[in-house]
Image 1 (spheres, helix red, strand yellow):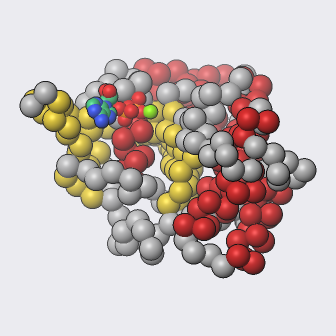
Image 2: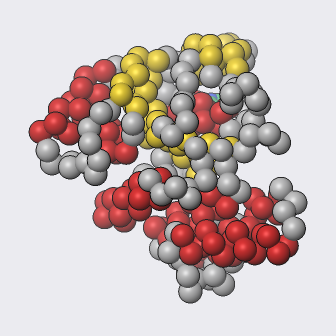
Amino acid sequence: MSGLSKTLTVNGNPFPILENISFVVDDNQFVCVVGPSGSGKSTLLRIVAGLEKPTSGNVSFQGKQAGREVVVSMVFQSFALFPWLTVTENVSVGLEAKNIPKGERSKLTERYIDIVGLNGFEDAYPKELSGGMKQRVGIARSLAVMPDLLCMDEPFSALDVLTAQGLRDELLTLWHNDEFPPSAVLMVTHNLEEAVYMADRVIIISQRPGRMVSDMTIDLPRPRDRKSPEFMDWVDQVFSKII
Ligand code: ADP
Ligand code: MG
Protein backbone atom coordinates (compact mmCIF):
# COMPACT_ATOMS: atom_id res chain seq x y z
CA MET A 1 0.00 0.00 0.00
CA SER A 2 1.27 3.44 -0.69
CA GLY A 3 0.47 6.86 0.68
CA LEU A 4 -2.63 5.57 2.40
CA SER A 5 -4.60 8.20 4.32
CA LYS A 6 -8.04 8.23 5.86
CA THR A 7 -9.80 11.32 7.13
CA LEU A 8 -13.33 11.33 8.47
CA THR A 9 -15.52 14.38 8.88
CA VAL A 10 -16.79 14.71 12.41
CA ASN A 11 -19.17 17.61 13.21
CA GLY A 12 -18.08 19.27 9.99
CA ASN A 13 -14.39 19.12 10.88
CA PRO A 14 -11.74 16.90 9.34
CA PHE A 15 -10.75 14.09 11.68
CA PRO A 16 -7.58 12.38 10.44
CA ILE A 17 -7.36 8.68 11.28
CA LEU A 18 -4.45 7.47 9.17
CA GLU A 19 -1.73 9.52 7.49
CA ASN A 20 0.52 8.45 4.68
CA ILE A 21 0.93 4.77 5.46
CA SER A 22 3.16 2.95 2.96
CA PHE A 23 4.53 -0.54 3.22
CA VAL A 24 4.80 -3.74 1.23
CA VAL A 25 3.94 -7.17 2.59
CA ASP A 26 6.10 -9.69 0.75
CA ASP A 27 5.03 -13.23 -0.02
CA ASN A 28 5.75 -15.64 2.83
CA GLN A 29 5.82 -12.84 5.37
CA PHE A 30 3.93 -12.66 8.62
CA VAL A 31 3.60 -8.93 9.31
CA CYS A 32 2.21 -7.38 12.47
CA VAL A 33 1.05 -3.79 12.77
CA VAL A 34 1.18 -2.52 16.31
CA GLY A 35 -0.02 0.76 17.72
CA PRO A 36 -1.97 2.12 20.65
CA SER A 37 -5.71 1.81 20.84
CA GLY A 38 -7.38 4.30 18.49
CA SER A 39 -4.35 4.56 16.20
CA GLY A 40 -6.34 3.35 13.21
CA LYS A 41 -5.25 -0.30 13.07
CA SER A 42 -8.73 -1.69 12.42
CA THR A 43 -9.36 1.03 9.86
CA LEU A 44 -6.13 0.09 8.09
CA LEU A 45 -7.11 -3.58 7.92
CA ARG A 46 -10.60 -2.79 6.66
CA ILE A 47 -9.06 -0.73 3.89
CA VAL A 48 -6.68 -3.56 2.98
CA ALA A 49 -9.60 -6.02 2.93
CA GLY A 50 -11.57 -3.69 0.67
CA LEU A 51 -14.29 -3.14 3.30
CA GLU A 52 -13.56 0.58 3.46
CA LYS A 53 -12.14 3.13 1.03
CA PRO A 54 -9.10 5.26 1.80
CA THR A 55 -9.35 9.04 1.41
CA SER A 56 -6.15 8.90 -0.64
CA GLY A 57 -3.51 6.38 -1.58
CA ASN A 58 -4.07 2.82 -2.67
CA VAL A 59 -3.64 -0.82 -1.86
CA SER A 60 -2.53 -3.24 -4.50
CA PHE A 61 -1.59 -6.90 -4.65
CA GLN A 62 1.15 -7.42 -7.19
CA GLY A 63 -0.63 -4.89 -9.36
CA LYS A 64 -4.12 -6.35 -8.78
CA GLN A 65 -6.97 -5.03 -6.67
CA ALA A 66 -8.68 -6.94 -3.84
CA GLY A 67 -11.86 -8.62 -5.03
CA ARG A 68 -12.31 -11.22 -7.68
CA GLU A 69 -8.63 -11.61 -8.55
CA VAL A 70 -7.16 -11.39 -5.07
CA VAL A 71 -8.88 -12.95 -2.10
CA VAL A 72 -8.37 -11.25 1.25
CA SER A 73 -10.10 -12.65 4.32
CA MET A 74 -10.42 -11.37 7.84
CA VAL A 75 -10.42 -12.77 11.36
CA PHE A 76 -12.04 -10.46 13.92
CA GLN A 77 -11.38 -9.95 17.63
CA SER A 78 -15.08 -10.46 18.35
CA PHE A 79 -15.16 -13.67 16.23
CA ALA A 80 -18.12 -12.25 14.23
CA LEU A 81 -19.93 -15.58 13.99
CA PHE A 82 -23.60 -15.92 13.09
CA PRO A 83 -25.26 -17.18 16.29
CA TRP A 84 -28.08 -18.93 14.42
CA LEU A 85 -25.71 -20.96 12.22
CA THR A 86 -23.82 -24.13 13.18
CA VAL A 87 -20.04 -24.43 13.03
CA THR A 88 -20.25 -26.00 9.58
CA GLU A 89 -22.61 -23.31 8.31
CA ASN A 90 -20.45 -20.52 9.77
CA VAL A 91 -17.33 -21.92 8.11
CA SER A 92 -19.03 -22.27 4.74
CA VAL A 93 -20.50 -18.74 4.71
CA GLY A 94 -17.60 -17.26 2.75
CA LEU A 95 -17.70 -20.10 0.24
CA GLU A 96 -21.40 -19.59 -0.37
CA ALA A 97 -20.75 -15.91 -0.96
CA LYS A 98 -18.21 -16.96 -3.61
CA ASN A 99 -20.77 -19.29 -5.23
CA ILE A 100 -18.60 -22.36 -4.76
CA PRO A 101 -20.67 -25.45 -5.72
CA LYS A 102 -22.12 -27.47 -2.85
CA GLY A 103 -19.86 -30.53 -3.15
CA GLU A 104 -16.68 -28.50 -3.19
CA ARG A 105 -18.02 -26.33 -0.38
CA SER A 106 -18.61 -29.32 1.90
CA LYS A 107 -15.17 -30.68 1.15
CA LEU A 108 -13.41 -27.40 1.97
CA THR A 109 -15.55 -26.82 5.05
CA GLU A 110 -14.80 -30.30 6.42
CA ARG A 111 -11.13 -29.89 5.68
CA TYR A 112 -10.73 -26.58 7.51
CA ILE A 113 -12.86 -27.67 10.47
CA ASP A 114 -10.45 -30.57 10.75
CA ILE A 115 -7.37 -28.34 10.40
CA VAL A 116 -8.44 -26.10 13.30
CA GLY A 117 -9.31 -29.13 15.44
CA LEU A 118 -13.07 -28.73 15.67
CA ASN A 119 -14.06 -32.25 14.60
CA GLY A 120 -17.07 -33.41 16.55
CA PHE A 121 -18.41 -29.86 16.85
CA GLU A 122 -19.70 -29.52 13.28
CA ASP A 123 -23.33 -29.16 14.38
CA ALA A 124 -22.71 -27.03 17.47
CA TYR A 125 -23.91 -23.43 17.67
CA PRO A 126 -21.56 -20.60 18.70
CA LYS A 127 -23.20 -20.26 22.14
CA GLU A 128 -22.13 -23.84 22.90
CA LEU A 129 -18.45 -23.05 22.21
CA SER A 130 -15.70 -21.53 24.36
CA GLY A 131 -13.99 -18.33 23.19
CA GLY A 132 -11.02 -20.27 21.83
CA MET A 133 -13.29 -22.57 19.86
CA LYS A 134 -15.25 -19.63 18.46
CA GLN A 135 -12.01 -18.14 17.20
CA ARG A 136 -11.09 -21.50 15.65
CA VAL A 137 -14.34 -21.21 13.69
CA GLY A 138 -13.35 -17.68 12.68
CA ILE A 139 -9.96 -18.92 11.50
CA ALA A 140 -11.45 -21.91 9.63
CA ARG A 141 -13.96 -19.63 7.89
CA SER A 142 -11.15 -17.30 6.79
CA LEU A 143 -8.92 -20.10 5.55
CA ALA A 144 -11.69 -22.01 3.73
CA VAL A 145 -11.93 -19.32 1.05
CA MET A 146 -8.22 -19.94 0.42
CA PRO A 147 -7.21 -16.30 0.67
CA ASP A 148 -4.07 -14.85 -0.84
CA LEU A 149 -3.78 -12.60 2.21
CA LEU A 150 -5.10 -13.38 5.67
CA CYS A 151 -5.92 -10.28 7.74
CA MET A 152 -6.37 -10.64 11.48
CA ASP A 153 -7.65 -7.88 13.76
CA GLU A 154 -6.51 -8.55 17.35
CA PRO A 155 -7.59 -12.18 16.97
CA PHE A 156 -6.39 -13.28 20.40
CA SER A 157 -7.29 -10.20 22.47
CA ALA A 158 -10.66 -11.51 23.66
CA LEU A 159 -9.23 -14.84 24.86
CA ASP A 160 -7.77 -15.82 28.22
CA VAL A 161 -3.96 -15.93 28.41
CA LEU A 162 -3.53 -19.70 28.06
CA THR A 163 -6.06 -20.13 25.27
CA ALA A 164 -4.52 -17.20 23.40
CA GLN A 165 -1.02 -18.65 23.64
CA GLY A 166 -2.23 -22.08 22.51
CA LEU A 167 -3.96 -20.61 19.47
CA ARG A 168 -0.96 -18.45 18.59
CA ASP A 169 1.23 -21.53 18.51
CA GLU A 170 -1.31 -23.46 16.47
CA LEU A 171 -1.59 -20.64 13.98
CA LEU A 172 2.20 -20.49 13.65
CA THR A 173 2.31 -24.25 13.07
CA LEU A 174 -0.31 -23.87 10.34
CA TRP A 175 1.59 -20.93 8.88
CA HIS A 176 4.71 -23.06 8.54
CA ASN A 177 2.74 -25.85 6.87
CA ASP A 178 3.02 -25.85 3.06
CA GLU A 179 -0.72 -26.37 2.73
CA PHE A 180 -1.62 -23.13 4.52
CA PRO A 181 -3.41 -21.17 1.79
CA PRO A 182 -2.52 -17.50 2.33
CA SER A 183 0.87 -16.47 1.06
CA ALA A 184 1.05 -13.69 3.66
CA VAL A 185 -0.53 -12.68 6.95
CA LEU A 186 -1.21 -9.12 8.10
CA MET A 187 -2.19 -9.02 11.75
CA VAL A 188 -2.86 -6.00 13.91
CA THR A 189 -2.43 -6.02 17.66
CA HIS A 190 -1.77 -3.69 20.58
CA ASN A 191 0.15 -6.52 22.27
CA LEU A 192 3.85 -5.92 21.62
CA GLU A 193 4.96 -9.26 22.98
CA GLU A 194 2.48 -11.03 20.71
CA ALA A 195 3.83 -9.11 17.72
CA VAL A 196 7.44 -10.02 18.50
CA TYR A 197 6.43 -13.64 19.12
CA MET A 198 4.64 -14.07 15.81
CA ALA A 199 5.93 -11.69 13.20
CA ASP A 200 8.74 -11.64 10.68
CA ARG A 201 8.24 -7.89 10.59
CA VAL A 202 6.63 -5.43 12.98
CA ILE A 203 5.28 -2.13 11.70
CA ILE A 204 4.65 0.45 14.38
CA ILE A 205 2.09 3.19 13.97
CA SER A 206 1.65 6.20 16.21
CA GLN A 207 -1.30 7.40 18.20
CA ARG A 208 -4.10 8.94 16.12
CA PRO A 209 -3.62 10.00 13.44
CA GLY A 210 -1.78 6.77 12.73
CA ARG A 211 1.55 7.43 11.05
CA MET A 212 4.30 4.94 10.40
CA VAL A 213 6.94 5.15 13.09
CA SER A 214 9.04 2.12 12.38
CA ASP A 215 9.33 -1.03 10.28
CA MET A 216 11.42 -3.65 12.06
CA THR A 217 12.50 -7.08 10.85
CA ILE A 218 12.46 -9.52 13.75
CA ASP A 219 15.23 -11.95 12.97
CA LEU A 220 14.84 -14.13 16.06
CA PRO A 221 14.94 -17.85 15.27
CA ARG A 222 11.73 -19.87 15.67
CA PRO A 223 10.20 -21.25 17.76
CA ARG A 224 10.73 -18.15 19.86
CA ASP A 225 11.40 -18.26 23.55
CA ARG A 226 9.43 -15.51 25.26
CA LYS A 227 11.69 -15.74 28.29
CA SER A 228 14.99 -15.31 26.44
CA PRO A 229 16.97 -12.06 26.86
CA GLU A 230 17.00 -11.59 23.06
CA PHE A 231 13.21 -11.80 22.93
CA MET A 232 12.78 -9.33 25.78
CA ASP A 233 15.27 -7.02 24.12
CA TRP A 234 13.11 -6.97 20.96
CA VAL A 235 9.98 -6.23 22.99
CA ASP A 236 11.83 -3.33 24.64
CA GLN A 237 12.96 -2.03 21.27
CA VAL A 238 9.39 -2.07 19.91
CA PHE A 239 8.10 -0.49 23.13
CA SER A 240 10.62 2.35 22.89
CA LYS A 241 9.31 3.24 19.41
CA ILE A 242 5.65 3.56 20.46
CA ILE A 243 4.80 7.17 21.01
P1 ADP B 1 -7.68 0.89 16.51
O1 ADP B 1 -8.16 -0.35 15.82
O2 ADP B 1 -6.21 1.14 16.36
O3 ADP B 1 -8.08 0.94 17.95
P2 ADP B 1 -9.66 2.23 14.83
O4 ADP B 1 -9.24 2.02 13.43
O5 ADP B 1 -10.77 1.40 15.36
O6 ADP B 1 -8.38 2.14 15.79
O7 ADP B 1 -10.10 3.75 15.01
C1 ADP B 1 -9.20 4.83 14.82
C2 ADP B 1 -9.84 6.13 15.26
O8 ADP B 1 -10.92 6.43 14.41
C3 ADP B 1 -10.41 6.09 16.67
O9 ADP B 1 -10.05 7.32 17.28
C4 ADP B 1 -11.89 5.96 16.45
O10 ADP B 1 -12.57 6.56 17.51
C5 ADP B 1 -12.09 6.69 15.14
N1 ADP B 1 -13.20 6.19 14.31
C6 ADP B 1 -13.22 5.03 13.63
N2 ADP B 1 -14.34 4.90 12.93
C7 ADP B 1 -15.07 6.02 13.16
C8 ADP B 1 -16.34 6.52 12.72
N3 ADP B 1 -17.11 5.83 11.88
N4 ADP B 1 -16.74 7.74 13.18
C9 ADP B 1 -15.95 8.44 14.02
N5 ADP B 1 -14.74 8.03 14.45
C10 ADP B 1 -14.32 6.85 14.04
MG1 MG C 1 -9.11 -2.00 16.50
